[in-house]
Structures are given as C-alpha cells and as structure tokens.
Length: 346
Ligand code: SAH
Image (cartoon, rainbow, N blue to C red; front, top):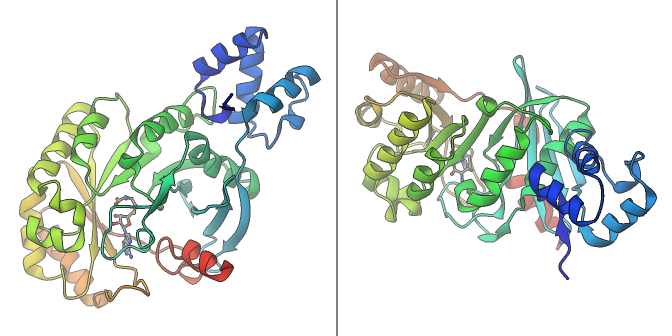
C-alpha cells in the first residue's frame, strides 16, 4: 500500500487518519503541533507520543524533511539562499530576506517550470515535477529552524508556476496560515503568476486574503507574446479581467511585476502604454531591472532609463516601486544557484 504523505494532511485530515489508527483525538493535535508548529525533523523528537504510535507512523508514512545541501549568506544584506535536496534527489532553491518589517521567505512551487519565459533561468530545463504541499511547507519550516529567525512573510516567486500546481498551492496556503501551524497571516502571503487566467479566476473564489502578483512585463499583447509564451494561450485583456475579478472578490490590491529589459520594453512610450493599461485597476507596479541570465541575451537598462520609466508612471498617477535587489553577491539571477549546482554535479 502507498505510504501516507503525512505532512501534506490538513488538520482535519490528520484527525481522521489518526482516528483510523485507533489513537485518541488529542494525539492528532499533538502530532500536528510537532510537525507544523515545532517543525520537528523526525518522529524521534515527538517525546509525548508513545513508542508504538511512533513506530506505526514510521512504517506507514512519508515524513518529508528537506536536506540543506548549500546555504549562502550575503555579506551585503544578510539574505540567505538555500539549496535543498528532495527525497528523490532533485534540488530546489529558497531564499530568506530580512527586512525592517520582518523576515520574508521566497519558495519554489515546482522542480523546474514549463512556462518558457524568455528571460527566466528556471524554465531552461523544463518542468520535472510539481512540489507536494509538504515540500512547500518544509522550505519555510527548515529555513525558520536553521536560521533561528521567525518567518512572517512569504512570497511564492521562486522556481515554478504556482498556479500550474494549483491544488497543492491552495492547500499549502491554508496550512501555512492555519492557527494550528505557523499561523502566518494570509495578508503577508503573495503568489506570483505568469497569468494562467482560468486559475486566477478559481483563486478569486477560494476566500483567501493573499496578494496576487501578475507578471506583466509588457504593455500590450504582441510584446508580451515575444517575452512570455503563455501569452499565446491567454489574451492580455482576459488576464487583466481575471485580475479585476480577483480584486472585486477579495478586496486585495493587485501587484504587477514588470521586468525592465534593455531595448525591449523600457521606453517612455512603453511606460505610457502601461499606464493606460492599468489605469482603472487598484494596483501597484513593481519594476525589476532584468537579472541577466547567462543563457539569454537580455540586458538591464541604464539606471537613468529605469528612473525615467518610474517617473513617467508616477506622473500618470500609478503606484510604483523599483524592486530592491537583495543578495546581489550570492545571486546570479533567480534559479541560477540550482542550475550551477546541477552542472557541477554531472
Ligand atoms: N511563475 C511565476 C513566479 C516565478 S518568478 C511568475 O511567472 O510570476 C517571479 C518573478 O521573477 C516573475 O515576475 C518572473 O517573471 C520574474 N523573473 C524571472 N526571471 C527573471 C529575470 N532574469 N530577471 C528579472 N525578473 C525575472
């Protein structure tokens, strides 16, 4: 019989599972607390559970724990990059960023990605598989345990397209914000998508209070197609309609990410068109000077061009910030640590 992926079970599911093993209901509460609040690394730590119960769990379940294989710390701002090995030998990347308002973790949602965005390193090897709910939770748990820092904010902006792993993602968010677990406020959670329109609409109906970030990167459909193959599937107007629906249903202000690529989408005309596109939406634009990826030819615009782009948006009354680059010295662009590690291994 297939083993039970115990860390992916929600509180009620765990109660049912524990009852099925003939244990008292309060055992489920203790077990959940060990896994999701005390962030235990093994059943051995769970000293208030009987040895026989623990042996039965050992036999019957998969107890997901991520193994750190590399941890890099930035000398500039304390940002930490974690490379974790999964049970099947795959590796994924997560980041801890320290801000005045608290600690934020950036997690991966898939091993690789199949969305194919032209400027992104994570998509170069394609998609290997979805992460389980437990593997997403574990990135936060291990980082909190290893760093000794309390994690208060979460962004799903690492490798992978979160809305391409929809069910696991939604469950992960519910468990991470569950009062029996780390209890991270949904308002401190951001999910970034390249724009899988039907799943944005689905997410709007989940009764969650998370922030939705859309990777826009272009101010019209044609230009977007040149950077993001997903635009061939969903028209920009329809994606923005889905975002509008998300705001109407949740009341959460939208975030649009716009990677500025030198000579591609960084002119004042682009800024003007972008202003028009989002004018009637309650939103905030995050400008990200593109991270050069070795395998790609894209370059960052001059600093003055980035500033001019921002000024133009501001003049048009748009809320905008330039993303502060964290951990520049340990970086390479998003997903590149994992790529380098895999290359060195072979
Ligand atoms: N798949 C999701 C989340 C992953 S990436 C998404 O597409 O939104 C998080 C953000 O980083 C996205 O906006 C993505 O487009 C952007 N990004 C990826 N590679 C980048 C690069 N080399 N430079 C700047 N931004 C990049």
